[in-house]
Image (cartoon, rainbow, N blue to C red; front, side, top):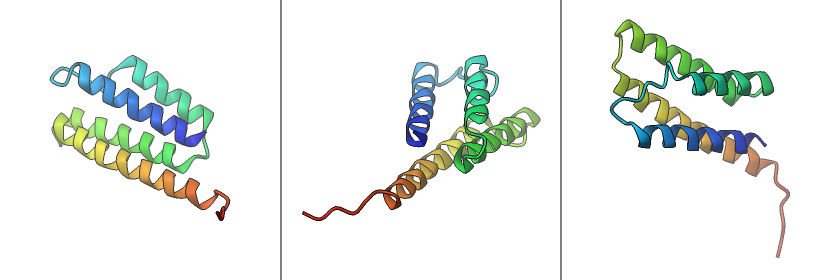
Length: 101
């Protein structure tokens, strides 16, 4: 279930980035903001969701303050999102039963 959420986030971010790379404003997109609120409400104990939500808010604040560019924020976000997907896959692999052939 958690992997499904992260994969949905991956697809959402990729689709938004592919549609309008120069004009995309991920920080002020009402749909994306609403999706994040729903994820946090649905999975308040998921450390990966919490980490990504906090990172997203922090990056948006830094962009608004002019501390980093939107491109820098997107790059940081993408790096951490990829790392989170790898972490979730490792976590799930540890909980899978061991099968022998």
